[in-house]
Image (cartoon, rainbow, N blue to C red; front, side, top):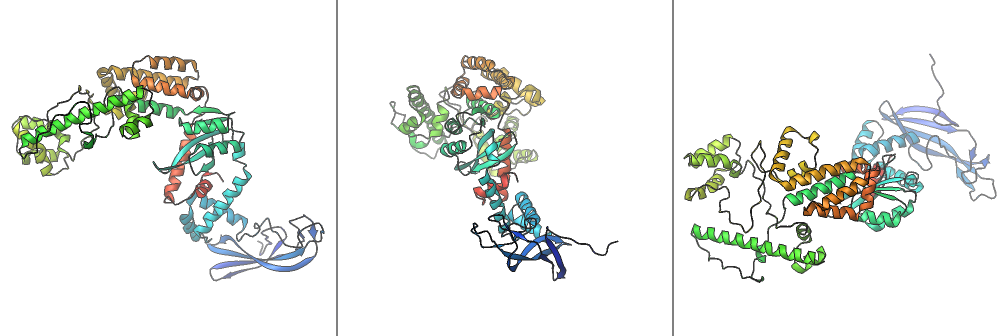
Length: 554
C-alpha cells in the first residue's frame, strides 16, 4: 500500500501542503510552468512577480476546502501586444477572476438551476460548500446571459412553439418560445406584444414552422417577422374553442342588469311599481314586477345589440353606444335569444339542496322546522336552523315552491336535462365537455348523460355529430375533409356552429396546417406549467432574466 501519492488539481501546479485548521481544509499550491500571454498567445520566460490566489473547492469529509495558489505575473516581450504584464492563467482549475474552482462552480450552477436560491444555499451549507443565495442566482444569471449572447441554442430553431404566460392573470403577460424538435425552451420574453415577437422572428431567420394558439397577435407577428414560416394552429386549442362555442350555445353566463337600467328611456313606458308596504303580498307583487321589468329591459338591450351588430357596427362601437361592457356585448352577439340568468348551483349548506326531500315531507304533513332540520342534518345539511326556517316560511301560506315565487316569464323557459343518477340539471359547462368527448373515453354515467342530452335536444345531437367529425378531421391528415366539415357546419342552422366555421375560415391556412402537419403546442404548454411552478416557488419575485436562466437548459 502506498503511503503517499502525488496529486495535482491542474497541469503545472504542485501541492505544497495540506492542512486542517479549524473547520476547513487548506491546500497550498505552487506553479513552476511558463505562462502564455492571453492577448497575443506568446510564451513568456520573464517573470515579473508572484501573487496569491484564493479559491473555494469541493468539500472534503463535510468540511470546506480552500485552495491557496501561488501564481506568477509575467512580462509579455511581444512588442506588438498591448499587454505588458499579465497574470498566470489556470484554465483547468478556475476561470479568470473566479473565486471558485470550475468543478465547484458547476455544482453551484446545477443545484441553483434545479432548486433556486434559498434552498440551494441551505443545501450547499450542509454539504460543506457555503454559498449565499444571491451569489448562486447571480452566477446563474451570468451563465444564462453568456449563452444568450452566443445564441447557440436559439439560432438553430427550425420549429418554434409560441404561447403566452401570465405574470399576473388578466393584467400582464409574457411570452415563451420553445424549440419543438429538441423540446427545449429557447427564450422567455417579458411581454406579449406583436412588435416584440416580430423582432424576435427577424433575429432568428431560420424558423420554418410556427406553432401557436389562435390568438391573432402571434399570427400577425409571424406574418411580419417570419413570412417564410408555415403557421400551424394548435389542435388542442381548436377543440377547446369548439367546446367553448358549444357551451355558449347551450346556456348563457351573463351578469344581471343593474337597477339603473330600469327607467323610462325606452319607447314603451314601464308600469308603475306599487308603493313600498309592510304587507307580504305587496312586497311579493313588487318583486314580481321588478323581475318582469328587468326581463323586458334585457330583451330590449339584446334587440338593440343584435340590430347594431347586423348593421355592421363593431363590438367596441356597440359597447360605447349602449354604455355596456365589452365582454357582455361579445357574448350576446353570438346568441340568437336572450340568455338566462346564471344561477349558482345549491350546496349542502343551502336548504334548496334538499328541496325535493323537504317538499315530499311537507306534503306528508311534517311541517315542524325542528323535525325537518334534524332529518336533513343527518343527510349532510351544514346550514343553520334559521336559514331553513326562512326557506320554509313561504310554504305556510301556499303550496311549496322551490323558487319561492310564481314562474312568470316573457319567454319560454329553457328545459334543462337532468342527470339520471343525481336528478340535478346538467350544466352547460358539463354538457359542452361531454359534447366533444368520444364515447370510448366516457364512463357509464357520462354515456347515460349524453344519451339523455341527445334525447332532449336536437340541437345538442347536431353539435355532437359535428364535434366528433371535427375531431376526426384534425386527426385525418387530409384537408379535403376540413372543407366538407365547414360546409356542413354552415348548413347546420345553429348560430354557434356557423360562427365557429366563420372564425375557422379567417385562419384557414393555419388550421389546414394543423390537419396536415404533426406539430402541436403540447410541449409549449408543458413548459408553461414548469414556468408557473418555478415562479410560484420563488414567490413571484423572479424577474424575466432569472426565469429565463432557470427555464433554458444548462
